[in-house]
Length: 246
Image (cartoon, rainbow, N blue to C red; front, side):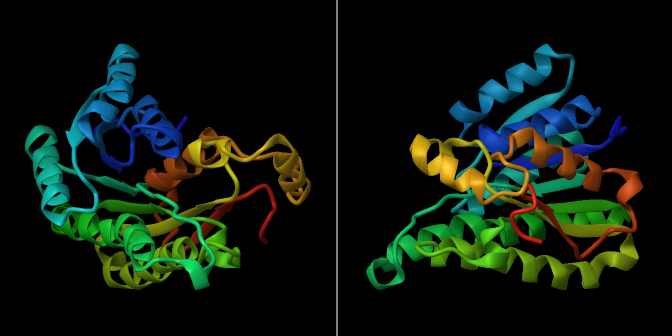
């Protein structure tokens, strides 16, 4: 199993779905985890990690507020002394055909899915540069690669993460910092729970693997990219989509 002992991870959107699975997997590998979400939501995953013998702290933040996010990063640095692994996972969807999409639906998705990643990454970058080791892993989406009707805002935000990560990977590779994107396909989360059974069957039929993914499938890829074994992988998009997009 991947060994992340003595590493510290900061995970946004850590209270549920993919973020929760990532926080749990990193903790199981030995990392100390700063679970960043609204505090009342983050407490559950922190309690579970601690009960399993791991170390975790709930870090309350509104990811759409740069000041709130920066304060959470400072708190993590104060409590843990360092941040080695950043997982930009927080995300929302506000689906609508472009002709009907309101500006606030566009702005909310870009602020949560893309601008928050910029804010967090910039906040952790200086400590990573000083220690000459770091992992920046952003959770994208298959629709950031393929597009999807009714999701122009969501697809734009996730495609933006890819461009952002590739540019940053060029900037920091020589300092021992890797920057990658994990791009899930359709995963069993709150976002997909609202899909009716008939639609889910149709959706699964489009996936070569024949099923929707699990949050743990994504967490496994994130955990690998966080490890020493992945030190020569940077600027990449790792698809976790059951073959839906190749």
